Image (cartoon, rainbow, N blue to C red; front, side):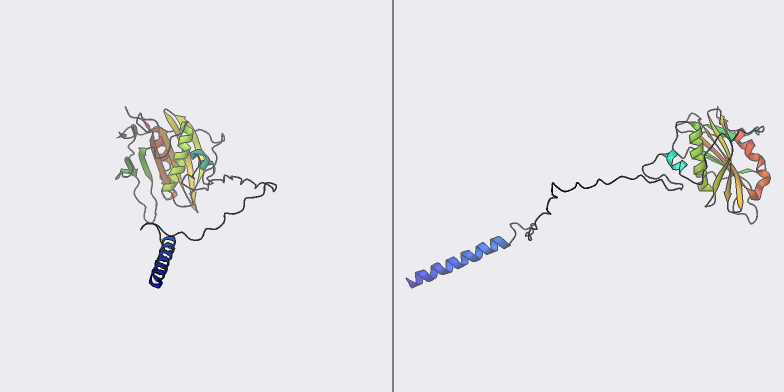
Length: 247
């Protein structure tokens, strides 16, 4: 009988160990044994004050060439201190007679003046046409006249589109450049802006023409001439006067 009792005791001990192992080990090879469970945070008392809602503040987009998230292109333009508001004080400008010879840009649907010497045709990329003035010794900038499909979002009005295009051209001027408007006026199928770009002690004269040439995007003609070549500032009027729809 003692042997029987001893056998039962051993069986009972083995069973107890087995139960303990089942409680500790995970039930499958990919499972992790759970740790101690903490109590959830106490719910706020119904008699206490309700938590204050967090107000959503819409900050002003930072001035710069890029579009701040959540803002329209025009809101970003108005927040850009480099570009002043275009008011009615900015008048139209009488334009001179353009050169007869033209460059046909089939990608924009525009014909633009083929400027006489000292202007010369240059490698267009990344634009679709390009003319430049000879680089002056010691000068970092030189006169440039380019065309391309509109590189910014088209707006409802040609005037607003031209404003955004002028802002975009600051990417092609020295850092810290600021615009002063000189002329603003409608042109056939588009809008023209002429402006001064100041950077430090120097400045350039520049202009943009945004014109619908019948392509998927309007065409942009952009000309800029630094003060180191100020004798060619008069060419800006001749450039913009000669921009027209190809055909």
